[in-house]
Length: 337
Image (cartoon, rainbow, N blue to C red; front, side, top):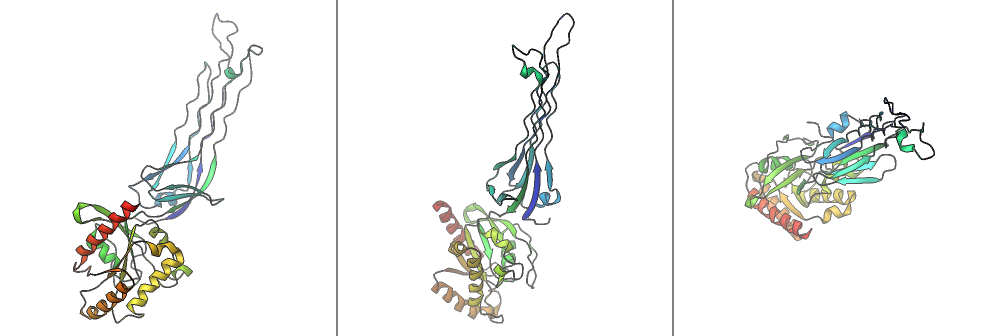
C-alpha cells in the first residue's frame, strides 16, 4: 500500500430541505388551515480517527466529500428527513488544518477522536410555522440553508513509542524486521526505505510497543538534501529514540561524525527533538572489522552521557538487552507523562 502522509480535501455539508407551503384539504373540514411541514437538516461532515488506518491514501484518491441534503417538508405537517452525517475516517495522529487560513482545527491523536468539520444547513420552515391569530392562512415558507464548505489540509504524524533514526544503511530496517512483524525492504544501498515503517514489538514482560523506522535522513536534509526533512514530523510524537550508528572504519566521515550529522539535522528541524530520551545503538557487530571501531565509538558516546548498546540485527546479538533497556526507558517516560 502506498504511504501518503499529506493531502488536501474539500468537504461540503448538505443543504437543508425546503419547507412546504400547504393547506389542509379534507371533506367536511372548512378552513383547514396551513399544514406545511419543515425541511430536514442537511448532513454534517465528520472526521474520525481510526486506528486500523496508517495512511491518508483514501483521502488522496477522493478529494471531494459531499454530505447528502435534507429532504423537503410535505403537507399534513410531515417534516422532511434529516440527512445522515458523512464520516471520513483518517489515521490516528492526523492534524486537520484549514487550508485557507492555516488554522489548526484538530489533532486527532487518539482512536475515536472526532472533528465536526462542517455543519449541515438547517431545514426551512413550512407555512404551518407562520400561522398567527392575525394570519391564519400564511403563504410564507423558507428554503433550506446551504451547508458549510471548507478546504482542509490533512497531515499525518505517526504515533510510535520508539523511533529509529540514523543515516541510510545504518541498519534501521534490519532491526525493525528482527524485532517486529514488519517486513521492510532491506538492501545494501542508500534510501532503500522511502517511507516510514511501523512494527509492533513484543517487549520483555509481554508488553507491546510500536516502533517506527524514519527514513531518508542525511546531512543537510533540513535544506532539502536527499528526501529532505519531510518524514521528520513523524519523530515528533515518539517517546524514545534509538539512534543507530554504523561503526565501519571503511566509511567516511567517521562514526562519531555520522552520529553528530544526524543530531544536527534533528536540532535543525526542531530543537527539542534532541532532548527526547535516546539510546545510542552501534550496529553490524557481526562484521569482524567493526569490533575495534565499535568499542572506540561506544567510549566516545558514553562520554557524551548516552547509554550505548552494541548489537547485530542480522544475528540477534545484543538485541534482547536493547529491547529490555528501551522498554524500561519507555515505561519511565510514560509514567512521567
